[in-house]
Length: 361
Image 1: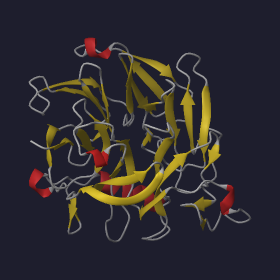
Image 2: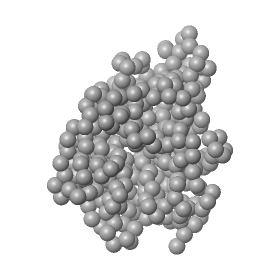
Image 3: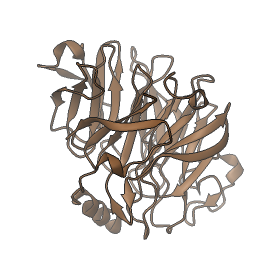
């Protein structure tokens, strides 16, 4: 634990080298540009009905609002919606209101688009653990209107100390009843619903301090509500934990649909639904690999795309690269969202930027 905290502190104290667009590579036919710069520690984004892009942050404690008013593909207006919050990395927009994760509580900013100059927040829900270790969140509304909320393990590898740790929950917006939909999840900071099947897919960060190449990070698929995904007994489906895996069987738990590299730190994921990109990208899964922090040789630091046939993974390929070169970090992709025109926004909490990826002229 001490090593983990020291390494995390060292990472937080690093000074980001300025990133330039010519360092980043995208497939032929695509273009990458800055949608917004100087967005401190930018994390999850949410799009309002009027085209305002809201962005949470990891270490800045702030929530931003950004808008491209002249339709040139770059935000020319911005507002500071909130400050002084506890790692408000997760945000979601629904029915005119913005919801922000503030560790143990969910804040609501009512009718936010109309109150950008003087936003007012209220505590919408507060019955969540207050642990800061893996306490930051990703939020998304389910097709049924409920708010999906993950709560990570308050440790590296341990048994869940309460029935509200190492789980993913669904919050009923009317009754505020919290329902467990998945357990055995160490730390998920990204998920999306398959546009055809409606199933929840989520990323999961594997355990640390087990070696450079163990365990793989994961992409998981929730088929049955209440499923257990193995943590802390098994890592990546079949790797028994030396302490907690004794007497357990891997077949008793759900295995990942895709095993990524160890410590690549998959965060935000997004199923593409737009029409701007070639048809081959329709309903494919984009993954933001935030990048390793404790590996002897860095890994991750890219955005990848999973090619699917229905729910079957066919291949996984790089989509945006160049965030790290020769062991020097220039950026760390964190989350992905889609604009109305079908272009993608990618946040970078290391370079304090949000990129826009377009296709064609």
